[in-house]
Length: 161
Ligand code: FES
Ligand code: FES
Image (cartoon, rainbow, N blue to C red):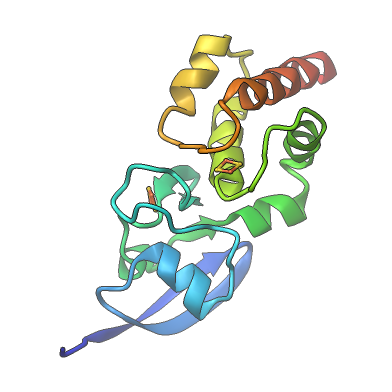
C-alpha cells in the first residue's frame, strides 16, 4: 500500500519535536511508536474505551481518533508529561491507596480524564465524576474505587485552595 508522509513539528510534554510521519498514522501510534511514549494505551482503536486519552492544546482527546498530522503546531501532553510535572501526583497516590487500579491498562487515560475534570476547580459530585469518566472503560475495578479516589482528591484540592 502506498504511504504518504508529512513533516510535522509539535510540542510534546514541553519538548519540541519534529518528525516525518505517515499521513494516516494516529496520534496514539505516533506517540507510542515514534516517540516511545507508551503510557497511552491502545484498546478499541475506535473511540470507545478511552485508553488512548491524551491532551492536545489543553483538551483531552482520543489519541486513536486523531491523526498525528493534525497535531502539527499543537501542544500535546501525555501521561508521562503529566506525571513528570507532578500535576497529577495526588491523583496517582489516591489511585494507589484506594486500589483504583488492577491491571493499570485504563489508568493513564483515567487519570488524564480525571485531571481534566478536577482542573476546572469545583468539587464534582460522584455523579459528575461518573459522567466525566464514562468514556473511559475499566475491565477490572468496578469503578467505585476510581470514583472514590477522584472524589478524595477533589476534596483535598479544595481544602488546599
Ligand atoms: S483506543 Fe482510543 S478510545 Fe479506545
Ligand atoms: S485497572 Fe485494568 S482495565 Fe482498569
